[in-house]
Image (cartoon, rainbow, N blue to C red; front, side, top):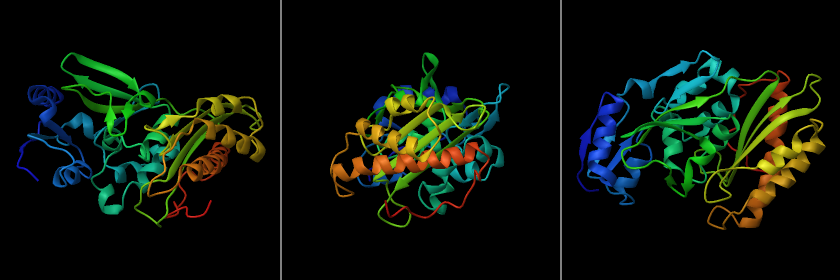
Length: 304
């Protein structure tokens, strides 16, 4: 690993100025669980590492006047899954926070960092997509907002331009009669990268028997995490039943275009999409009907 300069700014303006001055030679450090490994192994190079954990806005959890949440980009995962209000309001997000690395990693790793690493297999991104999250971004020309489903542009790349940093993730107010769930398949028991990940969010009608609105997000089946919009749209007005969820899972497979690699062949990943979407929808509807929003997450889902 080559030597680099280290700076820990205490304000957004100071961080933006450093990033703009050093251009692509500057790399951000939030938890450091990805960037430090990448620098050590020569996968990335940096003349300057900018530690953003000392910026107050990036470390805060703020509930907005409309009932929504603004989650600082550097808030560690363990803080998220221990917050009862977040668990109740955005259960898929806490599902993801619980399985990003092990306990030691979760003490440093953040949802914002997981998003900015922009891995196709990132566990947080499908959950952010289905929870309706948007990215608040600061840069030399001011601030802008980008929906999470538009943030990633390719494997390991995203829409951040020179001098920009992610400040926070803004989530809409939790809806009545709604629930969400994230699930993944991994070959090991824990601390592995998803072969496929699936997030589901749905809102039931007044009867509690039909789906009024749905969102589906997938990981590890395309160059970027993605929304399965066709399957989600098909669910609207359908009975909230196993048969409907199975059909939606079959439709979600059409959105997948995975590769074959050491974690599994493409056709198996396509199969897993249907299985996990059905299971995630089943979990989401259980939560929408008042089920446990903070179950013990199994260390691995090893059979599908």
